[in-house]
Length: 321
Image 1 (cartoon, one colour):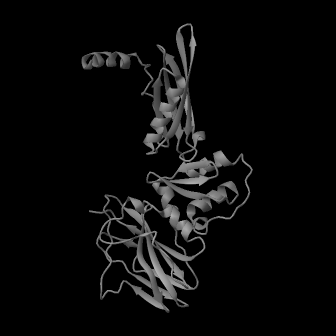
Image 2 (cartoon, helix red, strand yellow; image 1 turned 45 degrees about the horizontal axis):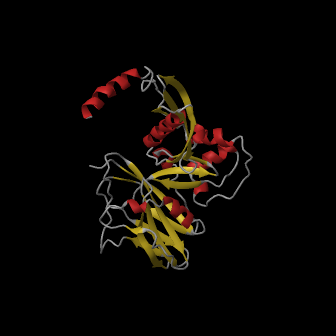
Image 3 (cartoon, helix red, strand yellow; image 1 turned 180 degrees about the vertical axis):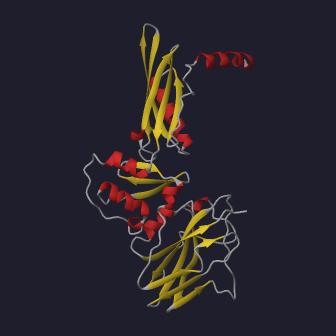
């Protein structure tokens, strides 16, 4: 049986159309997926699945198969219902070539992963949009400001996580964010009643980082680290301050910058101020170990701070060793 399979497979591959797997694509913002099946619906599904896999998505799908007997033969119709609305935007997928060859369907699909603001304009401009309240953190980010200007409307966008990837969501529109898009969710937020100063803005591996904090009133200070990939780590939790705090206290310990990656990254530090202690148990405390996969909580953090007083500061970290 194994020998027979090996003999038949090259014949099948040889019989496919010349264009299949050979469509030239010089646009880095487009992804092409291919599907092949005896059934057209199924071939389209496979093409979309291939695109989804290249975006590191987990495509949920269900298939209905109905059969009807006619003259001792079965006509099979496969209807694929792709539950994709919470993963990516199907409006950006086009079937660019479909061909039936020797009773087999060959399909090529294209996904347009262009600049996020263009995708938003293409998919939302034809809808009836009304201004809505935006998240207090998101509304001041460069990305959301750009979208607000592009559409002329302030929409209640959400940031959602799927398989360690980040997406921008509004209503039934959702699209993956590139690393540059995600960095555009970082910004420097100030407050007239609190000063949040870092010793540097750019760091190299192993350098020390420290914070000087001044407040006009007493309260509790917490510091949260937002990593370049959206992991959240709690650095300082509910430290009481009357007017000034130096952190860390160099008489007890130091904080060293680490970059385990072979490329430069950006990070953001977020300071929370409150008159009373805040329950921060949802976020992992930073220690000697790297934050684990359960720490992808940027979406939860920005919802958590929506009604709270916070400041932010961005740092750059050079390539690690």
